Image 1: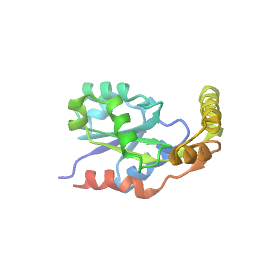
Image 2 (image 1 turned 90 degrees about the vertical axis):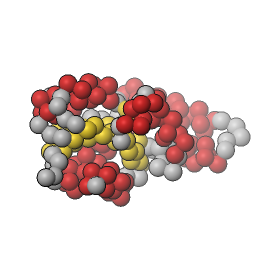
Image 3 (image 1 turned 120 degrees about the vertical axis):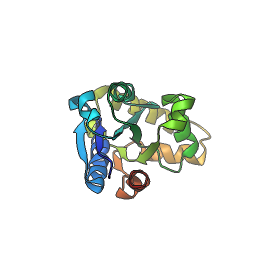
Image 4 (image 1 turned 30 degrees about the vertical axis):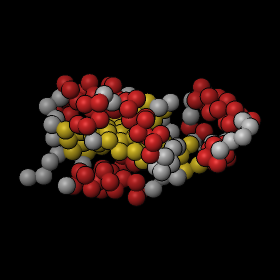
Length: 176
């Protein structure tokens, strides 16, 4: 018997929604915005996959999604996060996961990161201003490392580095 899955997402600039749609299509499962999901809905499936953006090192609305899952009868909770950080930045991504999960959760909650990009046109005024300030600081910084220079070069404008390939580790996990 195959397990029933629901993909629950929180999306601000659209990247997480796009990845959630790709995963739902690949797995032929339910897809719902976090704003509309209830613990009862989660109780009707075996696996809850929650996706959101990494924002200032935190997964948006992860606490709410964990609470809903805890109130449900679903048996497994999986998390994916999207962000502008390239997948190759494993140390930074691992640190972000440590900001979001306890040691026990890190071991027990499967989690996946998918690089996406920046969409200034869809960001809130506050987020745009914070990014612009950070961008100016990076450009003015003296003696930048090569990574810092690359970061300064790319964060000044919107860009998209998302790919269907980045959902494959999560899809493979769900199919196993």
